[in-house]
Length: 216
Ligand code: BG6
Ligand code: MG
Image (tube, rainbow, N blue to C red; front, side, top):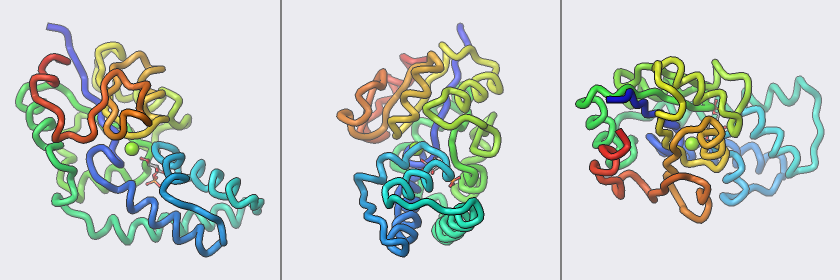
């Protein structure tokens, strides 16, 4: 039997932290007088913290010194961490454990592939860290999604060929990264937004274990 690996994005796939990222960016945007709403927030999904701030300042037509830029990055993350510090296993998205437990029971290796520098501490908070053989996050990658780097490192750490990996992603940039890595991509969210994915489901409650079995 060929060796298959499953790679999961974190924010918006395993836990609903996308909402917390939004609230923290919205607070900064409001303070700076930059119009920012849920639609603009779509562009923030899957991309690094630094790139998010660049986009926000582009939206506001603001140019700042490197020092100010770095200070706002810290400010946003401190606000975000106020939400993260309160997280526990109740914030795992519905039916995610169903899929993770199936893969664990069948000894199929799993990795996390996230742009977040907070990924490991979030996995600890929601008690899912032991499921993952590899955790590749924003601290290890130099090229952000849609570059395939994060998923290629994850595949290498699992010891699985990229074409035998399956990626679960909620972001347009993440689906593009998975496709560019030559992996099977499963979009979690709106099929109209994630149209380039090999498969899409609105959430994990719509994923049958037969579907997972067929991918292995
Ligand atoms: C991604 C999120 O998972 O992580 C992005 O989808 C976020 O919205 C990025 O900007 C970086 O996260 P963090 O926790 O390092 O600020
Ligand atoms: Mg995501």
